Image (tube, rainbow, N blue to C red; front, side, top):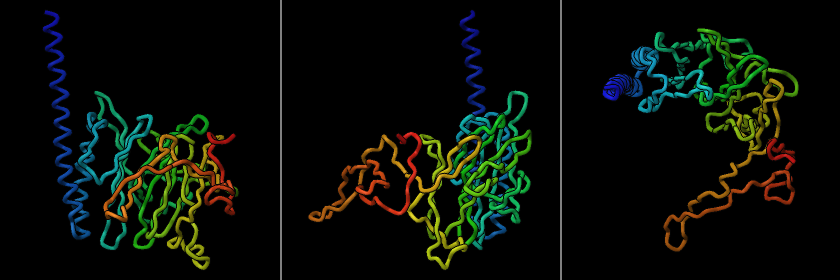
Length: 324
């Protein structure tokens, strides 16, 4: 009798979870349709209306407890990332307008429980707010960006989260940015005096560069650093006009030291240890066929004057785990 009772309980529990999964899956299908309508809209008015429908239905959906761990893989043009400690999740997307400006949208979701729905904080973009600003910002005066990395850190007794993001500035330039947030109940604070360079400490860091180029900004967990391309003007006469700045083949990084992200200039980018060889495609001159071969992916020290490309004017800094 006990075995039958346990079996029935398992069956009922399985049925409940199945119904919940089906509910979210069905909502995802509708969201995908709304998103497709948004992406295919031709005018700014049509985009605004379609986005409002998508935004409202997404908000309803992510408030449901069972949505927190759902992948939403069908929403391919909506970013969804979770903090490594699973404290919150971000849903983030943009809408490009006819003049190539962008509108940005973001929900921060915190997991609820059986009695309460998930808590959602919406970031509201204010066109007058710049990511270069050194003010403390809140969810109600957000500058707008697409975030792709969350790095938990601790400053004294405070738990903070470093965000890496991207934004378009219109027809001439893009920006990559590093910001830090803290969560206070139903509110979010952007910015903290935590980014230290040689002359000052900033609340956030923003890099503006030419739309014709690409800038790398990423977190390397192996070396516990945020590494990025150093930007320079295309010519000396363009100094200060950041829409003409491009990567100059050198790299800088922020390392977290004594409660701050400290700038280290001219650092060395190192390939992951497990990737000692890479596949490279080439064309056989005799047959015209594409062939693949493995080539060395070994790290070369740029400060070694005997190494290929060594002996430049920079003195690169080796990551901590590589130092003697």
